[in-house]
Length: 218
Image (cartoon, rainbow, N blue to C red):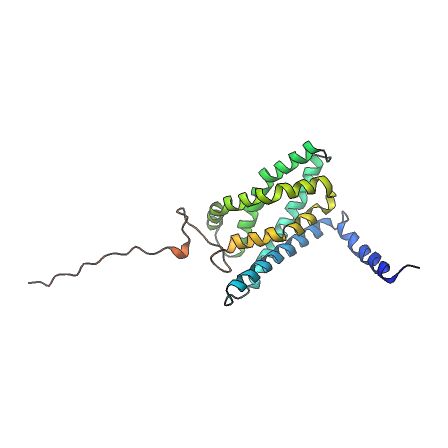
């Protein structure tokens, strides 16, 4: 006789299994990417509220993170499928090659989509999005090299192809929290836009013109 707990587990497994079939895998990867990016923003906003109790939670910002995550989901899906098709196998040289390609090619592209996607949804121009990406890229890219090479070694060595995007998405809840912080630091609910000098807009001041008093006419 099958125990009720085991029977429930089997039924739940039967419900989840179709989500990772070829028919629904793209949808699963897209929705999970959006949901977990939104989760990262919720975590970051919670941290901001704890530091500043007057700060209000902005669900519109979380919605933008969800939409941007859904934009990135299909890109990540086809990127991993393309990597596995071009470089099949799990040998060390193959895995190292995949990790390097992921860092050198995919990471900057994902950064572009993230900053331009979020900036566009916030109502900024493409020029403003490009300027923000330029000023925040190195902080983003240095953090990316700190986190992802080791994580992707595990991914390419041990994780089956159909679970790779889901593995990355769950692992990146913390990464998405950092991205939310990087995107919105210093200006709650909005990205900081910097000019070529690297000075945030809100810190700029108009030049002060000294006005000398006129001498009374004799």
